[in-house]
Length: 432
Image 1 (cartoon, one colour):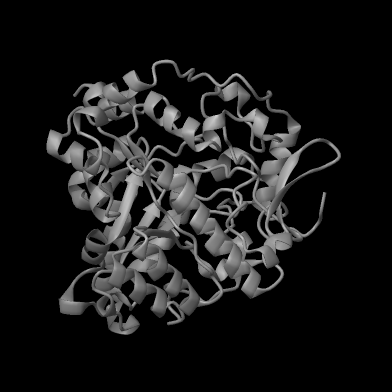
Image 2 (image 1 turned 180 degrees about the vertical axis):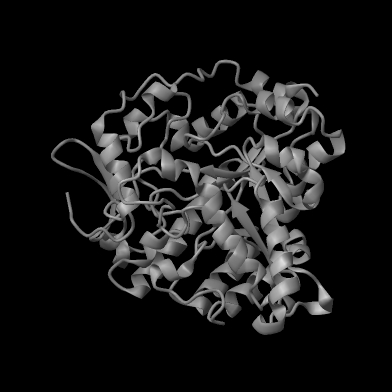
């Protein structure tokens, strides 16, 4: 397998949203309440929605930097490469990295956009959520429709409003929305409560995937309050395992036959064991738990049919592909976060999947993403021009080394620990 022959579509990238994103999308009478970027006395930039502080401005916007220059919290847009926030430069960066297309999650609002649900009142919050979605579809994705899979955000306080937004987005060609890995973290009811049934119905009816990104509950998985940062950075799959367990034991699947969830940025190598454990629980404990599945199915079978997974680089997961449903496994880049292998994605995929047959590689690297998210870049681009080699030739002048930023210092550890503890996460109320 040659890297330049690959076609790569990522189901997990991120936008470091530009400061003018709400201009032109918020009605006049709401503009004074629109989220904005403020600069504090130290010259640091930060998104605020009223009194609510957004997530870190850059959130590891480190693409193109050596690891010795990684920062948890870039203080200004100038400390990132423009491809983090400028759509035209993003496409050039994607081409330079040999990547055809990507699904982009929010950044400063949180991965499930909870910040936008915490403004002055619910009417205003709904305006801002719709404005975010309109910007995402009309400016970011529409600028290069063959390069971006649209992904919307939802009002997480009202399931009927969220369902209506799913249907509105689907009518505009968007078939992915963010959904929290654990809505109770925001004070919303759980997926077991029945509260979210209108959302599940809308997603099933429109073929919209509910994407549960690791960290979308605004809580970081860790062990002890004083654990070093490397502990939390080792545990994303643990957070995804919590979501997996909630999903496979939920009772709504039979009611919504076309409902699909996606576990994002949790890798796949751990999944076969947890499916084995779930089947064991059903075999040994269903007598007293009362858990039943339609047609006598096992929990592993439900997972393999209904839940989409992805990985960046997961050697163990590739070795266990025969224990998974190949139709539901996708590739992710995670640009511009620190786990991303940009600009070396094609080389890493080629090495990682060297022993995998070409048909399976094609499904994982682009085919499954196209099918699940109803995305067809080949409507306007030939397959020959979509390969990593062709894309790189289009962007031969792109400097893939990021030459701005700073070396990490104690403030990065402090920012990480504050986020892990909640002080810098959703809901912090102090102003700069």
